[in-house]
Image 1 (cartoon, rainbow, N blue to C red):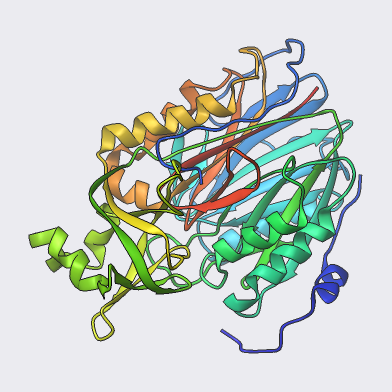
Image 2 (cartoon, rainbow, N blue to C red):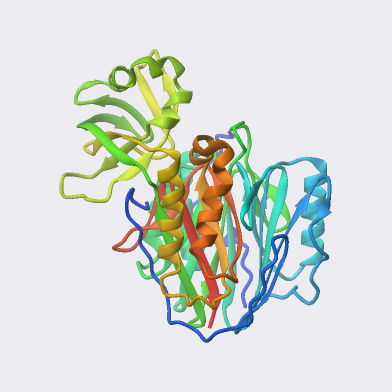
Length: 433
């Protein structure tokens, strides 16, 4: 990672390219707009071609062996078209397919990232592209993309991103960022500071399968690392819903975080964190750090905080007896071990979808952007598709779903603002009334 000088927020704003036109475990939160009239439905496992009141939606896929899953739709390119692309690798064939998408949609707003698994309809693929094209009539779109040189730049980048998208009619923002070189906690903290609470912010951190080697986000037509990108949605015609759920439960005694720095935990109750964690895992401690995926931590600000966040362990330092997590562990917080099983994970995915769809009628045909955690996929194994099926079962029957398995999920708190989550399923629904 380059250790260059950090650009000031004003420089970030100048760099932003625009196109005009946590959750807490055990809880589901949702916010939506008014219900709209019924519309014609279409449902196809490989391609959706859905005409709703004011938005035309197509979802389809690209795979290395078979190419495009359906013919390219015509008359979709426009400044009010959102093209969402989630991709599994950086092979020449995949990059060529990305270039073809950009060539077919020179006026559209492109948003996408690499993944730890692509969600397309009711299935999960690897080394493919999951694509959604949504052409709005009365919803405005604006894109911003900013470089992040080091993780220390994440908060300022979040502030600059929010300021670049801020407008009087901004309703929602969907954020994607490099999954290895961005501090997601600090990024969403900066976004929260720049945007009012009524703006719904969701998104995720790019993935790289189980490799954890390199990730990318789309910046215009280029797939780049060390970037954060987002699209803002503007106007009263937008209807948006969100839901987030984990399916994990806490167990064992709650400990005080007595020493931590960023996402590195050093001490709990004054004792070395790794030694204490090992004592709880017993025989499973021999498999660290891999077995840590089965036992994340819940953290909360204090006894009056009833909505803890989940933090997944990424690595351990035997010499320092410390543990590195996929999000910040603030000193002074309370921490406790968590556990789950496959049935609870599948059930929680349905809870997230149900929360997102609360104000959408059964006849609605929205775009669903679903972001789940790589840790959930590793635990679910061959049952991973059941999680995605559980999401679709709770959404309107005409929904077009794309998404990805991530290195971190972004979703709002009940009282407003956004949090970074681990080990959750998050669902964002978008349509136009």
